[in-house]
Image 1 (cartoon, helix red, strand yellow):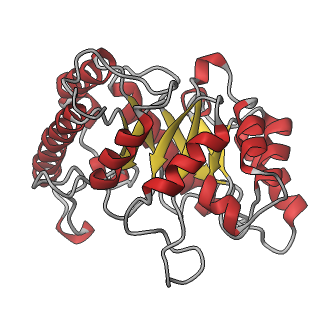
Image 2 (image 1 turned 180 degrees about the horizontal axis):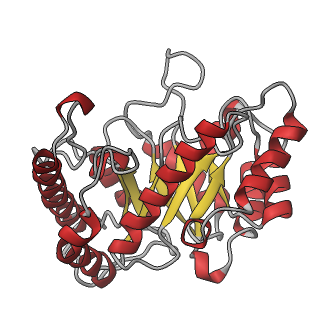
Image 3 (image 1 turned 30 degrees about the horizontal axis):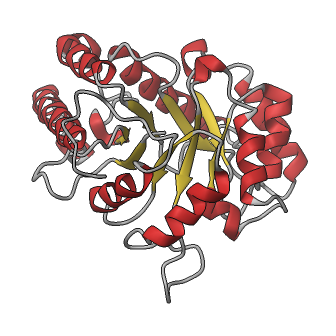
Length: 307
């Protein structure tokens, strides 16, 4: 079991998702921005290692406009050595990486233009992970997409589009249950049709349930992951007290998190904390998880005081 958080470290003083307006695009500006983003990504991973935070979601903005026709820089080649260096660091320290394209990536859209742009964005994400020479356990997670007034047809359209994706995308793509459209049961049905692994979002399952208890849901999702996919990835959060339904908590509630760990034992998983204060909650979660027999302790982390 590895614990992580998405995209932004709020303490380190840099961002790996710095971007700029399309109107001010130039090849020189792109290269400068990507160079800084990669430098910060490496710094975040080094900082995470100090706290035994070994799961991280890389921002989609790592290479701005990478899937847009305006981008003609061969960034994979220009920064090949840096990507490989970061990948070596990830592998050497037993880290796991994921990416999560934004909500505009919809491969079951009715509009062919949206599908075309979505596929281009998925290719970009896969290229980033390939450039780091990461294996198939580094995943790209997406939502199923829109319902468009006909759930069955939309699920079938997802399956049809999925069947025509590039192999380097398919080996990394996973779907997650969402908070309003597609339940866990829907995602499991799509898995049966396509073989795509199902990432379990705990909070979405609470907001948009399909009847399974959490422990059962974890077991059902685990069964969709093959050895080459790695162990199950799970997104974890809780309801913000007093916030609108479905709003993620600002910080981790350790008692609730420990209840979740106890409820799901002995199923193994890597847990992404979708909680607002990022690395602060991840450190608290490591403090809870390190007492769990499933937790992975890296020999190189130097983190010896969490017990």
